Image 1 (cartoon, rainbow, N blue to C red):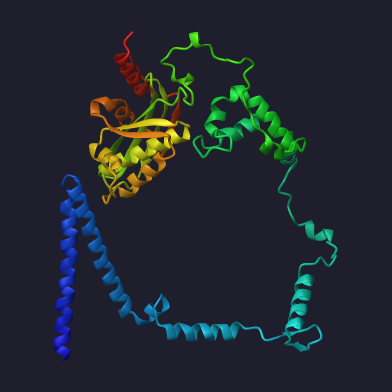
Image 2 (spheres, rainbow, N blue to C red; image 1 turned 90 degrees about the horizontal axis):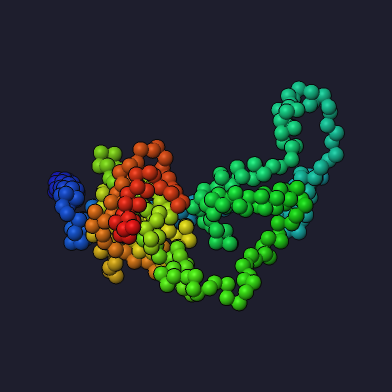
Length: 402
């Protein structure tokens, strides 16, 4: 009987080991194939099967280590019930001794003793401090430091504080991110600095700003004359802005030897002028397929942070564009990324995902190919690297020759 069980156990362990090896070999083979929907679906199912086998292996070794098993989550109800009951018994407070040494067990007496104890503990006893104690303590704030800490606030300090804010972080209640204040500080800097300094000095109440609305009030019935506006100027179409006609070109470069990728997004208006760009270093990127999906997500985030409402996202990865335009659940390795992109796309009034050939996406390609920085993230507003600006200007002249 014992020999039969040992032989059965060895055969079962060998079969499980071969199953894990077969699944790992299949995953390696699928990673070498073109990432079609069928291949990606098969890859996902194989990874799930491998995870299940690994979970079985982990559970087996937990059961072998009996004491460790009980310590880290066994469903042994009787064991844990006895453990909890014993702990509760030890931690239960039966009574207190008062200041006269009498043992008190009634609830009202317990409350009174506890209240008096903590009142005395946290109440000042009026103890005088002997100056001799402080003689051995060295002063850490010298006269120069004290002068610096006591000096008046300056506008330069307000500007340094504004510069230190991440430009594309979430905007405030006015809908304007830090990049707006940094870009137009030469216009609004004095007013904002004066207000902030007044609040810091206590001369103004910051609560009042929550009840303020800034609006533009036209002084005439028709502030814009129709004969001064071209029909192509979408800024004067009701409920539309000139920045609404936006194209976001995205691309990515992938380095297999260290699993890193560079994603880039270049944003241009309807006339082809660059209005924004960003470039990110993404570490631990599993494949070029994932890098292309991340580029789309980062382009959407950039457009949202800059406040656009109508965007067309163009990528030269046909597989990624097809997944983004599909209504089915994406089970590929980029499923979580494409899902996040679709969710963030809902904040726009219109967001389209379009495929464009590599030649039509050469500006975004140049943005990721020209990377020579050690920064994890770079961004530009109404600007971009010189090579990218040159190529964007070339595209614009090609589409609209002089």
